[in-house]
Image (cartoon, rainbow, N blue to C red; front, top):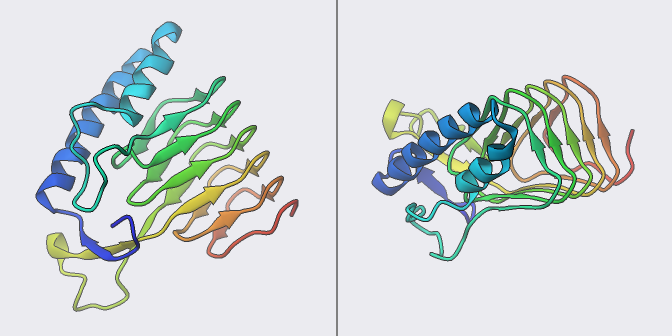
Length: 182
């Protein structure tokens, strides 16, 4: 999964990890009514101590979150432990991070509402797309420092968005974006 090889969504450990992440996300969404708890609950999504991690995960891997991070609810992710967020990051409501592989969001980045960071794709082969037995292939997503990602953007796996880039609302990002693109 992490190294870009195909994997099964329904491998037993991934199902368990996903379920535990969803439980923590419910606590995070509930905590948004109490600002003092927001950061604490989101850190529990990224750094859960009872998740054993997916099949090819080193045991020590946990997500990270810098200082001054604002994440509006609702927020969704698959596992949490593959997400790394820098300082002074704002993530708008209804954002989804499909974190089959590492997803890094650099310092001073703003992500608008309804953005999807899709860290995996389903197979192009109909033989490999078989309902709950489907295979997927992951790829890292790297959003560098001081980026602005507009509303309703989708970023596909294997993409790096260069430092200072601005992605217009509604875009689908399928390849790397150079630094400072507007």
